[in-house]
Amino acid sequence: MRALLTRLRHLWLGLRLLPGLLTNAYQRQLLAEMRQIGGQLPDILKQPIPQAMAQLEKMVVPRPFPLPPEQKTRQLADLAALLDRHSPLGLCLRRSLLRYRYLHELNVPVTVIFGAKFAIGESPDAKKIMGHAWLMLAERPYYEDDENWQGYTTMLRWPKREVI
Image 1 (tube, helix red, strand yellow):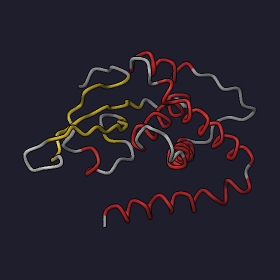
Image 2 (tube, helix red, strand yellow):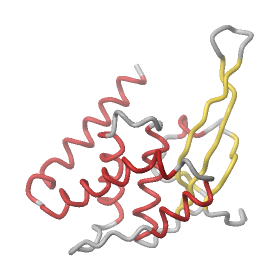
Image 3 (cartoon, rainbow, N blue to C red):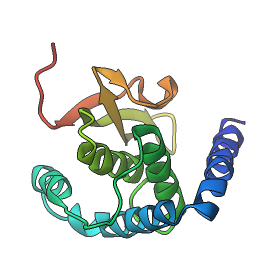
Image 4 (spheres, helix red, strand yellow):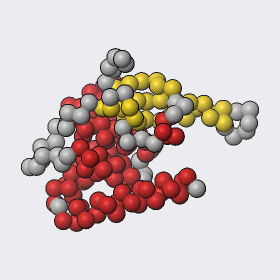
């Protein structure tokens, strides 16, 4: 049931953005740019996380228009991550890194959290490690459902800010 609700939310996101994408060439260009950067993420992540994150932060893409406000930029990044179904990276990682890259450009002080937790494996005796990535803003999850991040242990934060 939860998977169905998630799929419906993803579909709703696409439907909400469709009118703007049909009428606004800048939004279409930005979505294409985000998808291109999303396609580069597996190669970028072949290097250690600090170098990969620094590369994302330093990326400069010349465009003849400013980024839209924070909410629209986040939504377009989410859609770009959703559309990249053939990526070897999980949706949460693609979404978090694309959000981070573009929100960083807008000077929104988000932090990427890379977390892990144990989960039941193939048999009750076996455990597997699950990973998840999400963003935090002002030490609160940034547009992330509680059930998606709760229970994960933070393995790495980027940028490395002091937790107060």
